[in-house]
Image (cartoon, rainbow, N blue to C red; front, side, top):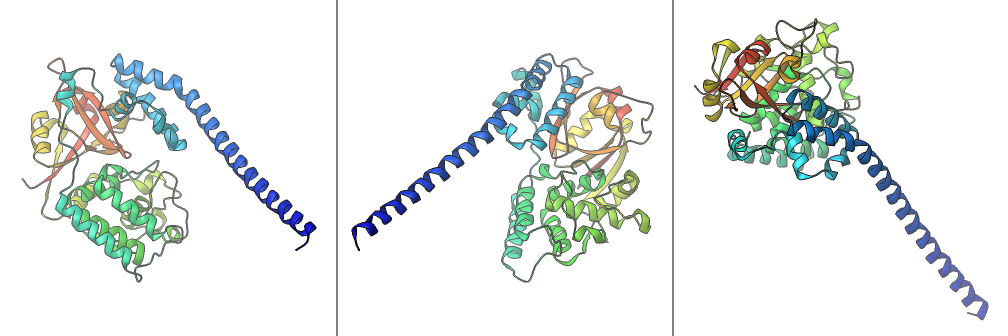
Length: 370
């Protein structure tokens, strides 16, 4: 190799180092732009976070819930926001921060937990499906790994089951109860739908809308929720024109009657379902049943119960199903009470009294062994 050849090698090596340095610099600049954009969004959200803390300190629950709803919509769009707030704000947003030790003690309730033996059985089922090359999906846009990861998370924390922006609160309430009380049946239903296009759950055979197999997952729904919630609703609409399609989600297609929900709940193994009007059951009885392991579902008028609002469009029969997520505690004055409900993949704190509760909770479903 002559002198000029050595020179060429050195030049080529220098170019390689230069190119590597340029790539590193471009990566740093790209990361910086992302961080700068995130900080911009976070600073723009600061007034809302300050308002949330002020309303919490003033115990103005109606305005607080409205602001928390705005925050949750922001987080759905900018998921990184949740990692940039203080622990106190996280607790306020989850409804678990208390202004005093007294209230904290009152709101401490048995968590929505699943029998660990049942969770273990469901986990084994997930692992078996993962390792079985014959169990492949019939949904073009959903990977097997993504679905099983989603199921694993939900059997360990069923509160994550979330209808998103869809009108599937009835199937959501049923599936939440199923995952709490029989996680193995929940996993099997989702897996059968994913691999075979049909499943037996809720005392019925269900299948998705034919268009669902090739569609993208609806925004706001996870793989498991997209598959199971929509299939339950579609399969209970016997008229072809009313078949539920998650990509259209018309209200009349998605509506679930109290009779339908009770029928689905009655299919959960070894449990009985009792249906009450809210005026016919006391807060003490709700607390006793909840603390004894019952799953309790309310059919509420959402605007009245969660927002303390009403309108000319108020439904006389309720418009949203939610799950009770705590015991009912007396709060402050003798006629005021505090509870938490579970909906849209999270829990919400509710301040209520007898009149407010009876006016905004239309029916109650209690699922237990009593």
